[in-house]
Image (cartoon, rainbow, N blue to C red; front, side, top):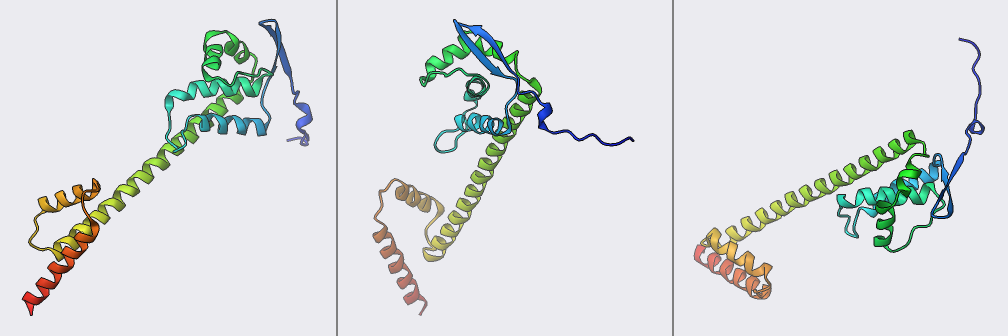
Amino acid sequence: MTEKIAVDESIVKDEVRTFDWEDKKVEVKRFLPTEDAMGYINDVVAGCLDENGNYFPEAIDFMRRREFIRRYTNIELPDDIMATYKILYGTELYDMVYEMVELDQLDVLWTAINDRVNMIKYDRRAAVEKQMTDMYAMMKNLFDALSETVGGVDSEQITELIKAIANNQVDEGKIVSALLDEKKKREIDVN
């Protein structure tokens, strides 16, 4: 091999392409710098989640298109989601811009978005599974404690009690008092 050739980012042309659309000159970046690319991924994913972290897959195409136009062009889309939706799906704007960008980079960005969404879904599923496991253990402990304290009560009665507690139909103080009375009664019977 011959000698190595040093290169730096100066060889990359930050090319901005233009086209006329609706009597406006639209500027399109050929590719996004790293910071904008990361922002694109974050904003698309965040736009598909509600305040509780629930994922809405029906929002992903809209969010990809909206952030694509926002990040790659000089177009300022309306704040109104319905108006933006009409522009993105009811005009040729998206397709015109799409034809002018570096598709290899866009493919990498879309893959990263999908990977992030899959990671979020996996994390949520794991959290739900952990909650279910913890709840099962807690219910088992409660059932064992109730069985030990009130040995003559069958599982149907315990189920009714749990339903009553869940529906706020039971005074917890009365339950504790009844359990303590039953425990005292059993201690007296044993002695």
